[in-house]
Amino acid sequence: MKHLLAQNENPFEPLPSVRAALERAIDDLNRYPEFRPVSLPRTIAAWQGVEVTEVIVGTGSAGVAHDLFRGLLRPGDEVLHSNPCFDVYPMLCEMTGAESVPVPLGGDARHDLTAMAGRIGERTRLIVLCNPHNPTGTVYTWDELTAFFARVPPSAVILLDEAYVDFAPDLGAPEVAARLADWPNLVVLRTFSKSHGLAALRIGYAMARAGIVERVVPHQVPYTPGQLQLAAVQAAIAADDEVRQRIRRISHQRDRLRRELITLGWSVTPSRTNFLWITTGDPDRLELARAAFEQNGIAARFYPGQAIRLAIGDQVANDAVISALSLLP
Image 1: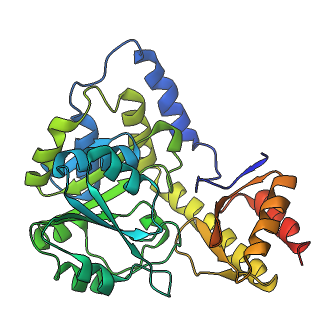
Image 2: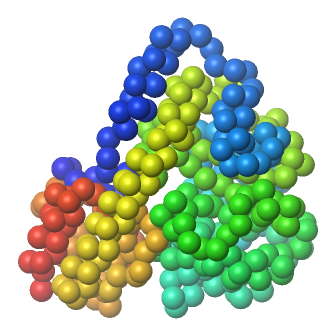
């Protein structure tokens, strides 16, 4: 495939400063990393304004989520999540013996928070909310979220997956430290894979009250993450202006592509991420789109009978999408 738009990857190659930091870190590849990570949590804590005891790091947000599931759940516990959602969450339920409780999205392609609140039961121990949502790109404001938080009992942890939050900086949420002070059962999960473009290095982190962190850390594999991840994170944080510039370029391409697809007759949900949720009332048209993408070397994520989730690529890739779909009836 020429145009890899299936996994919501950042289309840009590493920043020069990140590349240089990785080249320097290669000199220590013969040395083990810290047995339990100290430097990376300290770096993230200082960046985010939280205590180092409130940071968990791991192999991408999926790896951190895995550790959270292992540390917080027991077989038979219930996990509430949207349907559809990030594929990893149902998988983690199977891996930990937890019971997956999928709740269909509302008609606006957002979490149906009313329905989710109604599904909270005695065995509910984890509630997963993606904001912005994966795979639809929709968002809730902080006021909307906290109105739901107030309905969650202390016995359940709220896992707020913010993998794409850098593409939606105006949601009105306070700094993470203030969130954790107000909501002791909240975990904020993030990644360096999306806006920072470090997907191959698998760097994720979560922020939560120290009591939650203490339950999770014993379940983590030692010696991860390593020196390369630390070097890349430090360089990426220092290059904040360049990262934000890339976010603006991706967002511009996203909005341009959405307008073009709507002109071609597709329904495209307003997105606050680096991808689009593309729907149609005609399932046959989805299959025609799949064939057109394959013929033009475009990899996208298809949800059979529902939608296409399409990452935003560079202008060449996005133009290829428009060209491929413009030939469909």
